[in-house]
Image (tube, rainbow, N blue to C red):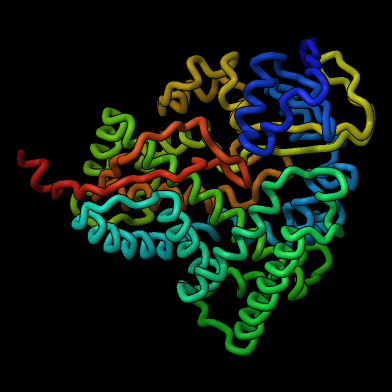
Length: 460
């Protein structure tokens, strides 16, 4: 039983136009003005849920009070049009079967198998950054991290860089992201409505499907050697442990799109913010460099080093507190629900803004302050487990969280040990766009500086 919470009710159409420009800022404003449970009414009505215990009740969902996929929910309608039968958007019965088939592919031992691929990608990227550091030229870190993340994910999913396909993939994903970020206006936002964006999005989906089906056909015709298995091969061999049923090519295509968009976008965003935060906090950057020097010395990163990078991991956790890779989760009530002593009707839409939750001053003192030591073990133990949910919680928590965290730690360690990223243009970190992830509206202009050799630093 949760403690009573006052339900705040915003005036009808209260600043809802901000949802299209800065959804995170809008949710932060709702919380600041109306509290941790707010009814916002306008083009569509929703409840902003920002109290950790209520968030836990919704996400863990032990009493089956809410559903992710509901025809009445305009947010998940749009996501479902992209994800289709993928794990993120499939209906309960199919989701349970698909989760049973796919879960072993993302277990801890399976993810460790991708570490060498990630490390090799990082080493390749370090050589690219050497040239950038030598030139001293500024570049858009957002575009750079998009390219890096796409390369790592395509190598892990397909056992090849597919670099010649990156431009096409980025184009398709950009169209899908524009669709997902668009405000779901009545009629004009309907999937059947022949708006230019809807037509472009459907064309991008068809093109991706043809491309992915071609990869699957080639993998069926020429299987990889056992030591070169990629995610396509693993999905071709995946079976439901209860029924023995495998996955159709269409189901594999839908999962590949889900994994690519979610993995590429979330990792890119987190890496971007990590190097931005290091550039703004020289003391924290120095602690990261010291840890990397102590653990690695002048040798290459290995899988065995990752558990030793405790402070670097805390930096990543703090990045994902302030700017989580996924900015929202939505549910629809399937029955009348009591939330903090308030009757929430059946069919109500619940929105959880993860950055708003992660910056709730009732849980996180001085939330705007970047402090990795918030994630020391004793600090974590003192907080509600529902206060920090960058990958969700409960049965629908992100299946790729271990993959993503391993990738983030590998890339941060491999690149930060050799380079410093320096901000070139001023950046307002609150001026963001919230699509699948949270990213600066106008990009981040940075340049690179090569760090001195480890041996030279230790001798000085």
